Image 1: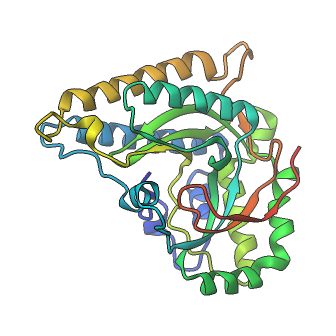
Image 2: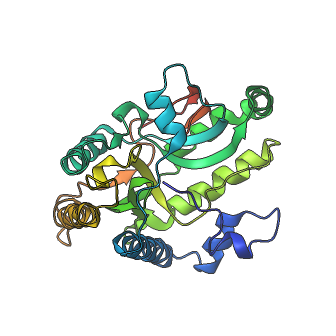
Length: 301
């Protein structure tokens, strides 16, 4: 999925200040307002991308050329070394994502699927597109603080709810919003991102994140070929694109019906308290598609 580096936060955040605190302040530090901001961002983006893809002028899926080469060209390697703190989905959420992926592959057979072991949500991107040597230099600087940061979710538990599939011409993600309504919901995923940003900066590393939009998502699939959406003549088959959009609409209706919290408190199947089973994971290497290697994994609950 495309990551946003220009948003309602970043464009108005003074250089050097924590962009996540800026948004918290704009929402009056109110979990309900924060939740609404995330929901609005998700709704607006989905509406925009859906309209673009269903337009008669749509030129087809935007194939991830790097991923396609990794999949189809033996020996090809990704040069982009990155450093991130990931939140790993718990077992129940992996099972839900697998069910969603099966529904998608039924209409897009050549879709690239993020395997369960690779699924992650980027809580903080510390650096991206570095050489291996540049990456290791940053690791040495931040390493004394890594255990503290990765364990942070053990005492600071942010709850995410209301998953929906969102998409663009590059791929698909499962996107959540911060919970609001329970006593502990004052500490949201946005607060967690703010705190991790502060701790990375305090460790002597300038955060180089491209991802500052009010979004909590896991990439679940990407497009690595256009042939699922082409006619026999190689032109865009708009009917097949519409079929995908309708399939996603159906998945999202199912998620709302079966996996959103109910007013009577029953079956919160789509809830995720970040840190369940594992704390944050500090990851380095060629991470773009869920790869790389783990430096440290925090304590889970």
